[in-house]
Length: 232
Image (cartoon, rainbow, N blue to C red; front, side, top):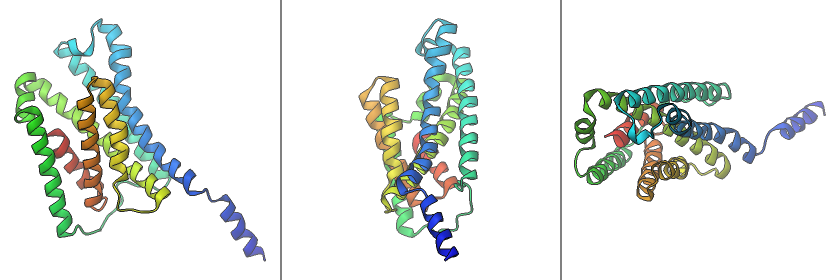
């Protein structure tokens, strides 16, 4: 009788799937808010200090902006990962899942499609064009910036996936990519004032979410592939 009462009490205290999913999704939303914090730096703080918008920053101002963004984003990634790990969501836990040949084929196709679309969008190599337009020093700082940005997008994907799997049970749908498309994509639309940029980011977010599933949820490999797809 005592064991039955204890079991019933445990069941009552166990949160339902909706609450559990929200508990996971909050980490992904925190990552999105961290991304959005760049807007506060650029338009709420730095613009008032420099007296010009971010589009008119000189080289020093732009590099300072990127460094400040590194600090905020890096601290956010560390805090999110640490808090999530305490709740049993360790992104860097050992993952021995095997990637099947057909998954590798899909990964290669997805990466190639993203690189081709980037080539078309930039009318050539994005990397070479940015190097030519920004110069070596700004180019290096900007690409470090991209790596931090991808890490936060990765968190949106991972925790968005985990949350939706908790809610909907099925695990073969790239929910994380959908969440990234709705957050990161809309964020790009708002920040750049371009619907095309928002749609492109949304499509990329969905593709990145699919790659995460195809890698068997291997965080480090997914991050490397996401950097290739987004940065190059």
